Amino acid sequence: MHTPNKTDSNTMKDYQARPDLLKDRIILVTGAAGAIGSAAAKAFAAHGATVALLDNRQVKMEKVYDAIVEAGHPKPAICPLDLEKASPDHYIKIADMLHDEFGRLDGILHAAGLLGTLTPLDHYDLALWSRVMHVNLNAAYLMTRACLGLLRQSDDASIIFNSAQEGRKGKAYWGAYGISHAAIENMMEIFADELEASTNIRVNSIDPGPVRGRMRALSFPGEAPSTLPVADSLMTDYLYLMGPDSKGITGQRISI
Image (cartoon, rainbow, N blue to C red):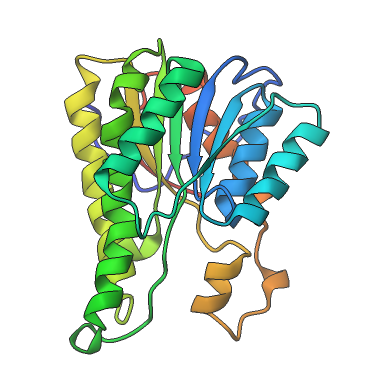
């Protein structure tokens, strides 16, 4: 059994990732065009990883790709996929493509997410509810399930689910977004418990807190973006959990 979950951590307070922390590792990042996803993809690549970028926003994803290549880091792979429309077969095809290209995976960061709307539960649009649940929860499950065989090929694999404080404490009007993230936390713990004894795969979640980006702006339109941290400044925890220095840590809820 993994150790009891913690909602915050001082382990990474003074952590500094060495330049070659993720050398030769293959890491899939979903939502790679978003604030957290793009920052993490570039940080992983800067520390030696070959990153597979997954998103449906082709132009933004190509900008992340170009930034990594121009910085002289390992050449990424691009995996275009619209999570809202994807069927289970699409996830299997992504896993097959990664298998053919790399033969294994050393990590997944689930950074894709859909806000939906801030609405009382009894007024929530049912079609939108299904969309949010599919992108935030079902897609993360299906991608993880499809890639488990690849992760088992790694000597030290890490899965990180991006989380949110609204999933750790229910708050009025957060609807499908909050509930989907509460389910993500539970799914993370189940995966961690099931995989700990028989594999080298560890599974954790990170709540990055308020981050400057499109989703935050939609949630709090009156908030000044300049008062929020940029995603690039929050990567220490992601690097720590994705790299070998966090071996043995699984089933944990980390808050930045």
